[in-house]
Amino acid sequence: MANDTLETIVHTKSNQNTSRDPTNNNTHVLETVQVIPNATFAKPFPDISKIKVFYGENFKRWQEHVYSVLDMHGVAFALTKSLSPTASGKQIECWIHANKVCRHTIISTLSNELFDVYFPYKESKEIWDNMILNYTAEDIGKQKFIIGKFYRWEMTEDVEVKVQVNENHKFLEDLKSENITLPEEFVAGLLIEKLPYHAMTTNNNSNTNNSH
Image 1 (spheres, rainbow, N blue to C red):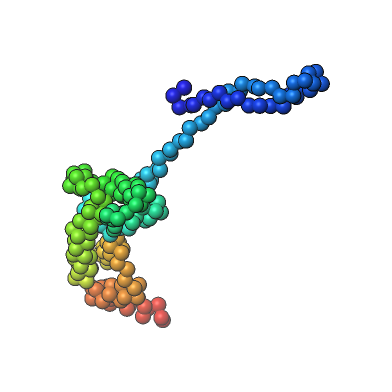
Image 2 (cartoon, rainbow, N blue to C red; image 1 turned 90 degrees about the vertical axis):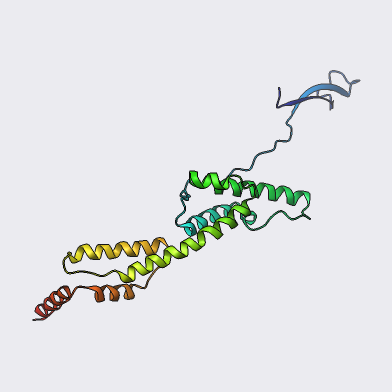
């Protein structure tokens, strides 16, 4: 058998039935023993099914998901550390494994276009650093754009208030997707300021009638 090693071992055993042959105290028995060779088990790669594919947007969210998964597997250090020239044999083996897992996780969660860009990189740290350099600035620019759009948004009298309030909520969801959360009191106050004049008048009249 290819995977099993069979050895024939000679054991010396005490004669179990000494009453029958008192002159024979020991007997040599040929016994076949199956010796299982040492097995090397490959370490499993992380489950990346819950990491959304990165298409070039929302980099920070993708980055946090990837780092969290790699950190849970104890290999995230390869994202920020290259192999030391003075590393020992065990350290080299550990880094090679960590780099392999990190690189596989990163390129497997990229769009086809970005996969083609970063596949030639052999070190996960190079990919990580390059993506931070390219996409962090874009995320900041996108955040500024969304915040500015939210502040500049105005309500008009020719569109139903409910429709415009829903539009306002959409802006808030866009902010949350960029990890930007505004205080509820501030959002409510800003929305009231943007209400059309006739909507504010109607609301005031309604409150006055309800008080009588």
